[in-house]
Length: 216
Image 1 (cartoon, rainbow, N blue to C red):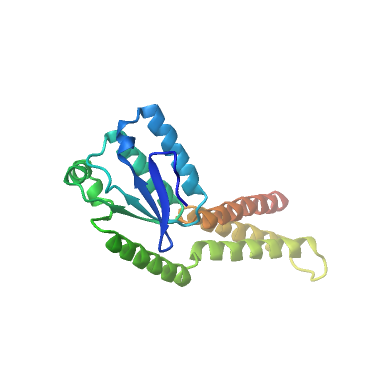
Image 2 (cartoon, rainbow, N blue to C red):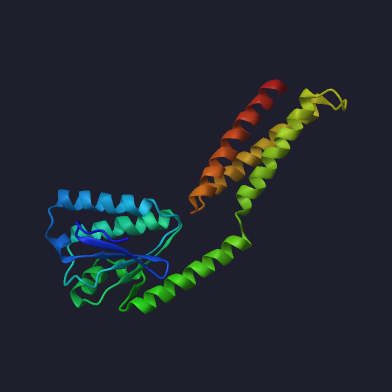
């Protein structure tokens, strides 16, 4: 995909998005630059866990306003669980990034092959980590929530003749565990797991609250 009427280009290179910023962006007024930045972010939001190359090679210098746009793109990609590499060949642009301290934060490369290799390796490592730990807090939180629900179901059922107080205490205990684990999952970088964490958290609070009211 490539945009034609804006001062940047978005293309696909070996399954990675490449966002090439053009010199015209440096000449844009802040309100125009902000609007263009919003449009660019909107396009990137449609991507799931994107791997992005931000290409600055067409620039001979970079304004502070344009640096802010690049930071916005980088933050959005990071929030979506994606990876970013910066492509730059200009000494002046490099100096600006160095002065701003961004050279220490971003992975900056002088050629596209190195940037692609970095993103491919980073994504491979990310997949390995995801398989290794789906997200233990959310997994345990779901187990705790289901256990709380099972205990409450036993409370309202008379078929097993269990001690109602014991089942309520168990319901509350598992709900507390669900709340803590759900809250922990909110720190996960992956958006879908954060959403699951919110669901576990809210359901655990509701179930635990009902159990506490019944116990009192």
